Image (cartoon, rainbow, N blue to C red; front, side, top):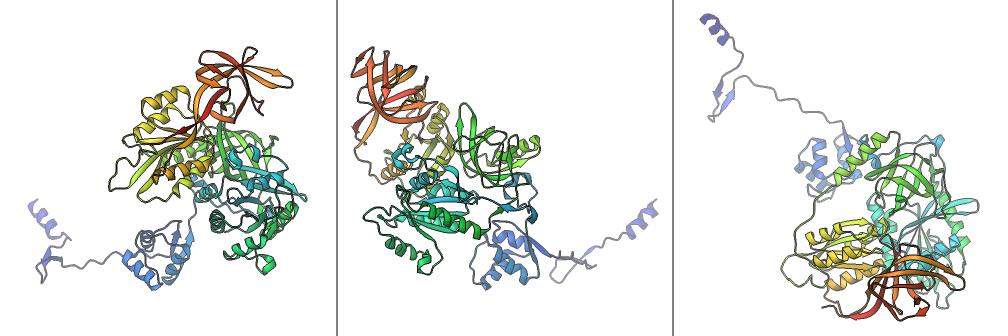
Length: 620
């Protein structure tokens, strides 16, 4: 046995290491290095950095940075590279670049489905109206729709995103009206490439404003054709030539001056030039050759979303490709559902929606985000799993313990670091949240940063107040109201709640606070609330609401806010206040009374009436 072991030892193939000239161990039998892998192709993914590309090419970061310097580019390892740059580097190395083929269903919104050209048919163009805040965007759309929307908007400013379809010359055109370019940009950031043509509205009497240029920059970034609508030409001070001269400096040279940009003179108020504008839109759409495949399962984009107590989550979507049908199982962003109903802005019901059609859908399990992409799935189980997987990727914990903050006191404790104002945003619809986020990001005050701790649709809840208290946040409510219990909780927890009905006033207040400019102002101070318990229809007078004062006092000269399910329905003034048959100046808590609201008869039992009077409030 000993001899056998000796033979085995002598026959061992392992070589003993020997000493080289430097005293280090080396092996006497030279081992061949593993052959270097041959790279023949690079799979390009969006947002690839220098480091990612170097790894894919199997070279060091330093080598790639040197190659980029040879192209005149100074980069860092974390800089994102464009596809054409990557292709130049790869081509020099004899490597082919291919785009990533996405098969992961959780990334369905990044998938590109190639349709058979035989199945493609002409679809409706999708138009976005953009421009300065008061240059008549919504009024122009009103004229196109032959309706009155602007009178229902607070201050005549569009508060929500709406999508409408009109017919002109036998062709359908889809219009998107937004609260401004902020929401449009937010949608672009989410990858919602839904717009085909932008109509830039400029007032002939007011000319090009900074916000006009900003809207123009966003439109150019989208890479779609632009039509300039010069509005308010009926005014005596109108000067269309000034508008054309100003915009020519921004590469929008009119066709009449030898350029390529169509200019149309219109008066939205008097319906002048509207047909001409629609004709030009259709001509431009024809040139763009917009097509889609109605035979495939639908994909599209969420334009607006909100929570309706009776119908549940409701989303306005535009079908960009395929045909959407009642009963389809869809995933939208991080939520899913089976489509229960579809209707347009005039409440007309649809069984199916073709490409380019905007429809309002119900049947979702949660409220999606404005700008989310939706896709139809065949299997409900797969749809649910996909939505849950997408949702889990986005869950983050960002609540930090800080002492309570308010707009006025934020500068109370000065330090050398950057100051953060935490905000909890609650709005009536999702589109308003998107607009506000975009606008808050643009507030430029040295040493300040806005941090949105939470945003959501619906009334301000106790959870919102508790979260605001934990994170030292201010609660911003847009077209929503807290209940009495929530107000009481906020007061006990030293949480400030600020309520608004015009988006621009929110950013104005925050900017003033940040710059230390909050001065004594007039504000509507709530004096009391009441609940509508019975309605009486009286000819020549209208609707009289039998009500009960639940808190405070209701004055005859009060402004009133009608609140239904924690959402603001109407703002107005009292036209009558009665106790029995007698007119009274005020009604206090615990008493019943009757009232009517000027120019508003759509009160319902259960509505909450919030009464307020204007008082001078000094902000310390």
